[in-house]
Image (cartoon, rainbow, N blue to C red; front, top):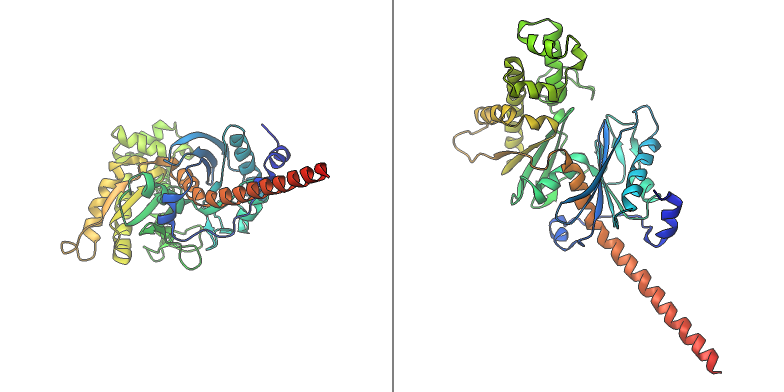
Length: 381
């Protein structure tokens, strides 16, 4: 793999710092250059990077472990740079998009807060743009995933879409008329921290009763472990499966056992799904979208989760029976949605790089013609 110094020397003409992005995303993505870009999805446990073409097809992807939260922000930046440089050795990368699991400011430069990383008001875009030879875009990972589902997945053709990502917690995003709605300060879509049970379970955000404490991967695992720790008869199946090591119980394991018919695991997914439906009904009352797309790792349970969510949504929807119901669909792009969306959003800024690069080439060509004319004139004297 080439070094950063080599890459910088090779592509010094490509060194660009992106400052702003056009807001008319729906229009501009239609005219964005059809060039490969890199998408980075940064979660609490993994950093996934991939080269994505203009049709949302992943040409190559790499994965690395997320540096421990106790490490400095630079440790995560180093991981991102290494992945991008590795991919750049084999692909002509024109821009890099970052989907970060945290709050990103309205300028899409700083990660204000990341619950699973050590970023606090971190100028991630500018730091990475200073180390990489292409433009960099930073956005919230749920915004990136929603964009990908709207462009290439379950949300195609929808003008008003809400994305809900169920993973360790709950993330979300809002798209209206082809634009991601980020709010005045860039932190719209944090649905997981709506309070649904006053005085309920303590949330890492500091509050109690947040929605993600009742409908997320953490909630699913917590309930299963509590039943197992209490030696409940309904938990014997999963206790036997983990050979008594309750800490080994995971969300994917619960989903797998539910598919095999384990009654407790099925019931736990139904509970999570019902809470999901309650939250969706609340969001419908506030936002009235045409479609809800459910993504994230927990959505792999499919109808074991989304079926109960649809039922609860219909029971709790304000004005039920007298209003159109939003469609509820499972995301189609799976765990790669954030990476694909970040790459596609970055393609919007690749055009700026191409224009700037073209102007540099034109200036160089004009200079060469001028220099050649000067040499010819001197030779004729």
